[in-house]
Figure 1: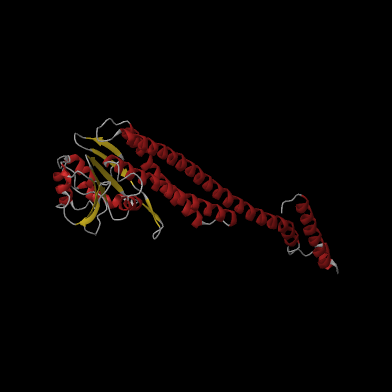
Figure 2 (figure 1 turned 90 degrees about the vertical axis):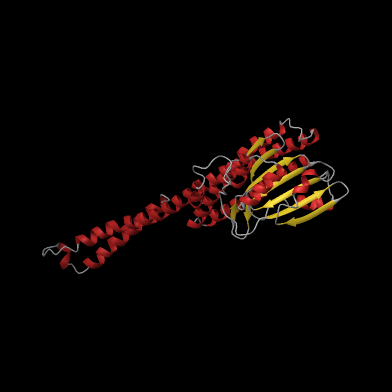
Length: 355
């Protein structure tokens, strides 16, 4: 994944700060803009391919949520930045999807970057997506890399007027969006936990290379989630201590609750990482035990045939005056000695519980 992004990252070399160059996966779909404009008594939802419908929302007395899907069209991002007076460095961070989760406060808005990992059931892999939030007076602008997110529940609450989201301001809307991202981590970690249980059952039956591959894949994905969630704790902590007038006092209580959820996610991911390490050790121990069993059986067989091979080798020597060569019952006697030796060793190994 990193190799694919390096050429686009090099495009920024030598450019001045604030120059808009999209860095990251390029979506093949056009940028879409969904607008939710609401108050306690009214609600309006519409979609647009241009920024013209968003500009009047700067002066609106209602709460507006402008959801932008796709950051690969830097012209659209630039026009939105001009319309809402966003700093060029903020726009640069929006189109560069390799940002570390962070929060920045400007004169007229607060900018927050998060990682929104989701589990793709079709591919069976985790999808790591950057989402950016801009909180302004009466307005929240969200920027996503591609369609598909964890905000469907918030959209339904806005449409149906459920909860207090239509009664609160834009700060509560941004809290709800961040809370949805954090709750998405719980869904993702639950999926990881189910896969760990499945791997444990397979290890109990028969360890295989496929199980080893799945363990390593989950370890890589757990590192991805951990790398996204640890900076998020700092972001939520800074947001809960923020003294900006854009965030009202009642909303701070909810933000602190999100901080508690973030700590729970961190504890969960650490526990899952320990479980994955334990599964890896269990796999190696199972493979080692199976190898020991195989080697023990082969050693016992080889040990039993060593004296038999010795006897057969002695009587396979072509000497003319061997005493038993002219004895009538010599052949039967040799076989008898060999059977007695084999039976004696079997009894001895059985008593020692070597097999």
